[in-house]
Length: 112
Image (tube, rainbow, N blue to C red; front, side):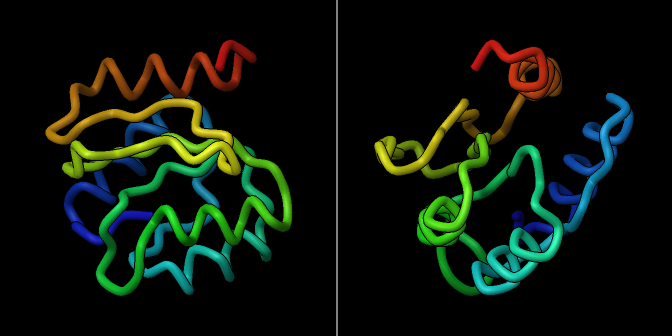
């Protein structure tokens, strides 16, 4: 869930290079909710500010349907975790590739 096309592509490539499948790349909260319902992802990587809507609100709606760990990658440095959301990590933009790789690896290893 990322509204900057180049950042979305970079995130997709990083996740795929780690051997994981990317279910969907979306840039609005409505598309994120729709795709999460359709694909049941094991992890969501989300920006907070989207082209339309808000990543936190989208994750809240997704969390009402099923629990899924979330990595927020955002330039919004005023992020406050919501106890309703299983926030595994918050990574500030601009992010270091190694920080994202470690966060994804930790989640799939069960160390969130």
